[in-house]
Amino acid sequence: MGMIFLFFFFSISELSIKETHISSMKETPIVIHDDIISENIMHSHVQLTLLKCTFQDSVDDGFGGSLDVSYCTVFINDSVFCGNTASTAGAIYSTNTNISIEDSNFTHNHADGDAGAIYSFDDVLTLHNVLFHLNEADYCAALYLKSSAVQITYTTFVFNEAETYISGMFSYESDGLISYCLFGNNSCENELLDLNGCIFIPKGAPTHLNFTDCTFLYNSVGEDEHPGFDVYVLDSVNVSVSHCTFSWSKNHSVYGIEPLNSTFEVAHSELMTKYNAMFDPFIRKRIHLAGQVNFKFIGVTFIGVFVLSVIFAILLS
Image 1 (cartoon, rainbow, N blue to C red):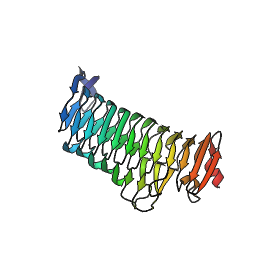
Image 2: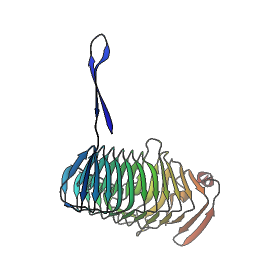
Image 3: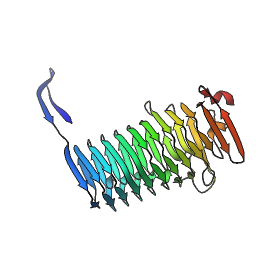
Image 4: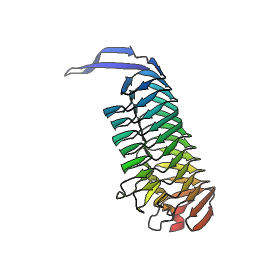
């Protein structure tokens, strides 16, 4: 990785470059293998490899209870992050980093603010066969994405809990593919907030996020039947769902999908919920349905075949 530093000197009459300094900053390779770590590790501009490591019971007042990395290349395999705590990002805080995590577990991590397990900002993030289990935060209990390019496969989000907002994943201006993932039994305590739920994708720069072959099961908001959402998309964010299953929550309070003022395509999927925003006569949405989409509600089954992207708002008008 190279970095160029330019030093400028300013005079009243003109702005000119008096000196140019060029430096090459190479990533230093670091490998940690079969280790148990109970403190925060902070690195910048390194190639960091973590193999069969356990990060446990680390507490940090700032970012990343276990790991805080920036401008790095990080590979994590067969590792465990358990019982770590931070103000933001209970386990890992990552910025401007190419980070790949495989065959690893994030369990019982806690953030006082955002991101119970991982906070990823401006990263290239790859997750494969990762477990997010019993993580907690005030906002976004498991995975917080901001301006990152992501590929998430065969990853499980279960029993994560947000005190206020978003139990599974928050994605802002992030693009990529989320496939063969399970979002199950995640919960938000605060049932007074509207538009709360498992995944929240808010308004931002043009974004395309594709969910395919994913399952949403028994996610909930509060203890009573207060509406929440498995996937909530706000204001013109391009999101597509294909070959996914949305099943009712344990308290039957969660809508499947809510695309408020957004472009949202659902194809070849199955929705099994007590409520679904696509059938709410008070909420007029633009939902594009393609292929075969099966809707199965408690006490009633409706099968709809929609081809070539039908705009569902027209059907409600």
